[in-house]
Length: 629
Image 1 (cartoon, rainbow, N blue to C red):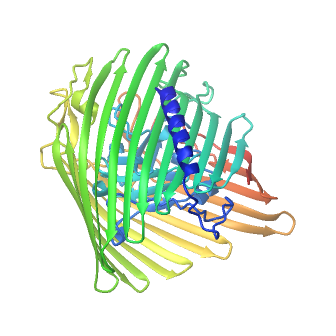
Image 2 (cartoon, rainbow, N blue to C red; image 1 turned 180 degrees about the vertical axis):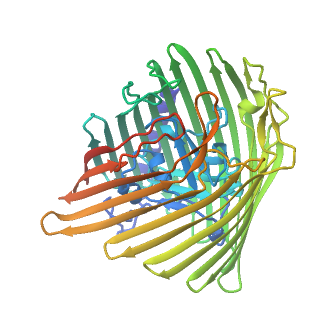
Image 3 (cartoon, rainbow, N blue to C red; image 1 turned 180 degrees about the horizontal axis):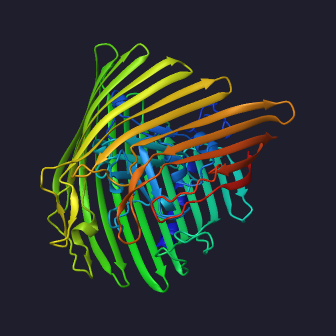
């Protein structure tokens, strides 16, 4: 299947190249196509679905730029997301192992993951998750985090929030290599070709990492991972305001793992994923239109000493988004999306389970923005999803914002939903489990208030308070061996407050963040792996030294507070786990446009497991070089 996709892409690329050479040059004489420019001639506009000019303020998001990704020396998505106050991540071992994401205290299946605004959650997984542990950062340009229920924008599964991985917009050619004393390495290359009114961007990343055993002790075998990632972005302007674009993403991650808490060999997972998007965008000052066709494929295989487990899923969809500014006070937007999901898996061994099925969904949405009075905005977002199996569900978001001098206040009320997975609907197992086709969607209601205060251009403060309730939650019932919707009228509750302080002073950028979270089960006990308190800081500083010249220092610190977890050995009791304090450091020296850098991870060699039973890396030291053109 992957080979067919490659040929299909090459065929379309040839067609697009011919179209590009036949069109007129729409670039003005003032435009300089030097890809070293900070602002290139082709602008990648990342419009949020179901939004318009005067509803933008109603969408809370956190943007992690390419510059910030490079500054922290991130290897995978986890290295970046762990610095977001709304997110807590646990990984079942070192790099390449399965990872779970708890956003605002909700479950891992309550976070929607996207590439360039297109959902990519894997329907062959039991809970319909996207595994963050197998995604590496080398070809990623930007990450956008949307905390809170965002179903009105992105659809199902964004109860806790959404994460959007941006792969486009990198026009700076470079090549980078990093290694350590154990011959682990990271290699990245980026090249852009520009021809009149079109561009072709090719990125490649390769990582090899072998450090510790997933579940054994320090004397056990090392479990390694190797990753290959390719990202190809193409675009051409057919007319001055009409842009045709394509993104292709291919990833393979092969990781060794342990099946129990002992020294084990012969366990290996081969995780392949591909995503193709074709789009057409028509933009002018007052109206925006965007069409996207997409296809996503997951192909996973796990070899447990010659017992093979196979997981496959495919998604195909088409979406249209429209927005228009009517006047200086009113904007509106509308759109629709059709998505078809198919999935299959067969889990063998002493415990076997399987599923096979398909679902589709048709969505219609709209939004309305109104700037009334002075510096006051009202935004309304609504969406209807008609699901093949569970019928029609409505979601909405209402926002009221007010700006008073340097102070900004926002109030939001929003709903969300999670649709049942293929396994919950159609699955079966050797223990007698069978799917439940009568399941309803999980639903949520979130209220949020946030304050932003800009003391001056160098100092700002942001605070968000939220409370969210999840009802009709889907849970496994032992008596019937099915997943059912809980009907006891007791909700799952999450509430919290997080804050962020940003300071810029001369050659120093300082960012401090903190989060206080309450995430409760139905019996009011704390949910596992959700610490009540997390905080940290990011520091970027230019150090001027008369002997060594200029050095760029980047440091990050994260306190992951005390929390509850379940022991991975009998009697499987719930215990309290101590907090961890992790510090990473990166120093960069630029010599003739070549960056020489050293990176120290887990600087104070903190020993910890997260989750319990799964080892995490101790202190590591890497050196690298990066050449930009």
